Length: 388
Image (cartoon, rainbow, N blue to C red; front, side, top):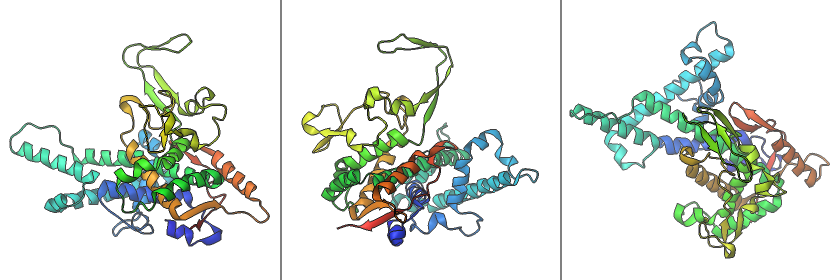
């Protein structure tokens, strides 16, 4: 991805959102299915026997998730359906076909599976096969997964980890270009850590705190999920407010948590709560709290419980939280280790105006299907230049 961006020179790229989506999907296919591709191949290429790429079929399914809740999938291919829905039906069939092929490949791997690094598909297949062997041996077991259940888990894995992480990376890159002082602040850390290509998670991730702070601050203001639906239990629940009266929720009351309001409340985040400032997340270790996450030189702040919930909270917290954090930090550290990003200026445009154009592009965001996205992500190009 970086190679293709740098080759564009001063013209820059307007494909930041699309390319980070491809990158995130490549990460998922590697962790999910053990498949690796070059950036310009793989999920961007129509496989033999298919009519759509894996990326396009998955993207169509993800962006129409609400449609699936209203119209049964088998109806989408009927000739009397609008052309748009018939196209969606094709995407569903293509995605299912890709899943069938990946599952068959994994099952046919047999003994070879033991010598390869584990991935999500292999773990699900192994658990399913072990359960089948137990039942064939006369043992009563109900822990196995059917093929449909395996496909459901894979789809949920893609739904939760693709667009959300890709969007966060895209927003962060645009914001880093708009705020060169914060970009240099992060590059200072990346330069100190050095090349992370051949290093382990344990020796690298804990030291890239500023990269993680960029992720947190981006999620605080531009998180993919802007509200979280919840429901009270079958019994009435009391919400206790500090310094105010309590509220009683009747049984089974539907509740939508306004994530944006929590993440921008001046009482928690200060008078500059609407400003993108990743350094707000770190303090010097001399002021450290023993209960806070620590690094050699700096310490993460601990916002009040419930005030920062990009991955939800409590027993239903997103299980992919750490996966997303490691992916984001690795991408940012790799990009900024050798390159600097800035806006491509129009004729006669000052640097200040160029950076403001990036902020305008970021702030022109809205919910698309289920996630927050920039509405005109190609309006301003990003130029990647090599730095020493």
